[in-house]
Each structure stands twice: as C-alpha cells, then as structure tokens.
Amino acid sequence: MSITAKELLLYLLPLPLLLGSLFVGPSEVVSSQDVFSWILRSLHISTLHTYDEALVNAVVMDVRLPRVILVFLTGAALTMSGNSMQALFRNPLVSPDILGLSSGAAFGAALALTIPALPLQPTAFACGLAAVGMSYFLAVNRKVVSTVSLILAGVIVSGIFTSGLTLVQFLTDPFKLQTIVHWTMGNLHNASWKKVVSAAPPIILGGIWLYFMRWRMNVLALGDEETMAVGLNPEREKILILVPATLMATASVAVAGVIGMVGLAVPHMVRMMVSPDNRKALPVSCLFGGSFLLVVDDFSRALASFEIPIGIFTTLIGGPFFIYLLKKNVFRFGEE
Image (cartoon, rainbow, N blue to C red; front, side, top):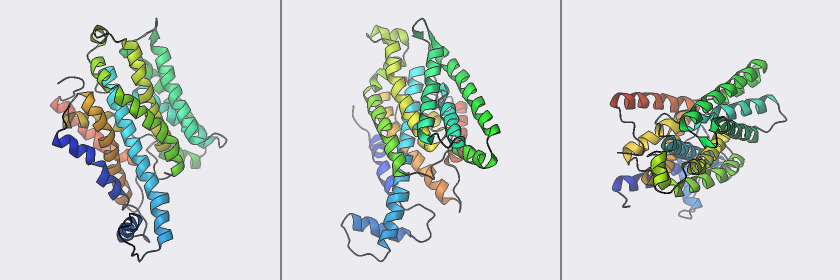
C-alpha cells in the first residue's frame, strides 16, 4: 500500500504535539523559555542556561513528561480499541464501553477509593476485565457468540456495575465521594511514571497484536458467512481481536479514569480522513487518537487557572461531532 501525503502528515503529527505539550502547565516558576533551554541542553545543542536546572528537570521529567506519555498511550489505546470493536461488531455506535468495561472499571475504582486496603489501578483493571468476561459468558449460546447477544449482554452487565457504583457512592463519605466522581470524569492530574509503567505493557502488546490482525478486521466486517468463505473461523477471530482490544481499553481506563467519546467518535474521524480500510485506519487510529487526546489535555490544563477534567472536553467535542455524522449519514466502517 502506498502512503499518501495526508497519511504521512498524520504519521508525523504526534512528534510536534508530544514536544509542544511539555511547554504546557500551570507552573509559575518554570517558563516556556526555561523548558526550551532545558531541551536544548538535554540534546547537547546548547550548554548555556539561566534557570534552576534541578527545578526545571523535576517539573519536566517528573510531572509533565509522564503525563504526556500517559495521555498519548490512553488516547491511542481507546481509539484503537474502539476502531477494532466497531469493525468487529459492524456497528458504528460500538465503543470500548459497550461490553461494560468502563462501568466495571469505575466500580472497581470506587471500591478501591472507599476501601483503602484495595489498590486503585489493579482493582479497576480487574473489575473492567471481569465485566467484559461476564458479557462474553452471558452471550455464549451453544459455543456461538452472536454480535447482538454480546452487545445486549454488555448493556446488562454495564447496568449491573453502574448500579454497584451508585451504591458505593451512596454509602461512602462525602470526601471520598468527590474523589470517585472526579475519577469518573477522567483523572490524569495524578499521572506518574508508575502509572506509565503499569499501563504501557498491555497497551503496547495489545496494539501490536491488533496491528497484525487489521486485515482480518476487514474480513470480519463483511459478515460471518464471508469470513468462513475465506477459510477463517469467525468465532475464533472475534476472540483474537476482542481480547487485546479489551486489554488495551481496560489498562487505559484503570490509570486515567473514564474518558468518554474517544473510543466512539475518534475512529470515525480517522475513517473520514483516510479510509474505512482497517489496514490504513488502525495505525492512524493509534497516532491520531493519542494526538487528539494530547491536544484536549493541553486545553484542559491551560484554559483556566484550575484543571478541568479531560472527560468533559472529550464529551463536548464528541457530542456535536456525532450529531454531524448523524445528519450527514456518513457512518462508515469496513466498506466504502
């Protein structure tokens, strides 16, 4: 496949955004000039500096850089997962949330925030995986999983975990309740290298797996009969795509909270820019999804003197975009 100029631009887009995001932050003692000088000095381009090197190094390396990397990984994971599930289920309204993933992770996080003995990220991760496992178990009928059954099971499981989350919120004290609500809106202000290290392996491994499965997504998007006609087992192929997509989304939700609309709306943006062909759309989803969330996160940090939860911005952007898609009737996946 030849790469067009548009695709090349999308492939290179993350580089300036990752670098530029290091200059964004609420710090009043570290200026953009200090960060620029620090970057030049780190690259051995310049040896001159008029800043407090220890302070700038702490702000950039311990605060901004892990957040930038975590935001990019989260955006890439949610978008690739959403793109894969939309192709898998042949439904433009499918997102990583459809199987109860976000509700399960939110319930796990609420439990961990209420019960100090439970670790936050592992509990959210485990509950998110448990929700998807329950959805799949409920949808299995005679060793066959239909798309409609899986989506309906996901709705049921999501409702169960949402009820559990509501119960935890009702029983917890007001101080912990505020933390739980803030987490459900997308929580990236506590980004750290520890979270990056915990989230990176499942996201990277899942992304690599989905990359090599991208041509099979094109076949699955045509239907089960067409999939069997080319010698593939549709049920096995669905599992081979669903597992890494779930792993990526659960890992991102566990460290960043519930960030709505990214896994639902951004894959449509990608298909409109390149094509519904998953061989092209999936790698672009990774890069554009991470870049998109980086830009949104920069606005959430710089727009006001206080930090606005990133999930508010993604919903405000994704809602009008979906209204546009609905009016123009341009939902596309798997075919021209």
